[in-house]
Image (cartoon, rainbow, N blue to C red; front, side, top):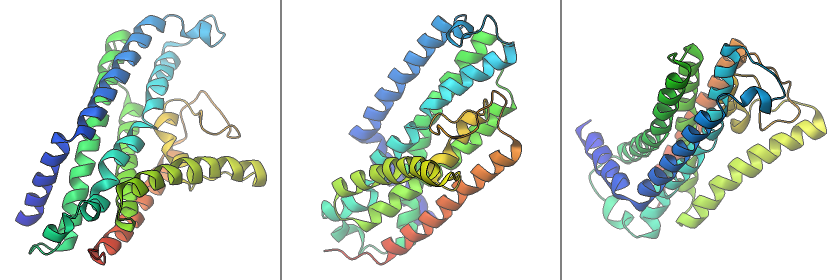
Length: 272
């Protein structure tokens, strides 16, 4: 356990000192500031934008949380790419694996320590946005976040886990950072997003088992509208609880499966 903690602390220091962290921090501050500005500016104009004279307060609050949550479908993807994709491949490309792999540290502990460090720093970036969201909307509407906010938060953590695990698995395959970066983005936005569209268009089947589709539940806990799915049934009511549980389970399965595969690949990776 002490060796695992040492690995974790060492790599989390490296992440916090990296340019990637400061870039993501800068972006999340800018995005949060923009969302705060738009929330205050359009708080009274949302009904008109939606073509309505008035909205019930509960629905209005839900719609604002829904709009804020749209960003949360993208932040974990890019943060995971920045922090997770080079986690293994960079050790090979930069030749640091020649010094790290022979150390008397179990490779499983090395992998888990690096994974926890990447997950932690990604979660910090995401939580900054979440805290600003909760503070802003609580101030505007004079109400603390309701239970659906916490549902969304738990699901978001699962999404971060699954994305970080996916990027680690891809990183364990390649020996170059560039290949790992590109592969993760291609898999998520081409295989998952485009695949979802094609499957629904051609076969009229809801690809609920794809990670991108499951992640949409982060938004749909407020208003059951899937902004990435033109064919899904849309509703202003929150997503049903069984849908929430199913999406959470799917993300958990992605996390476990990709984590185990990544660990297996890393354990057998050779320094070349």
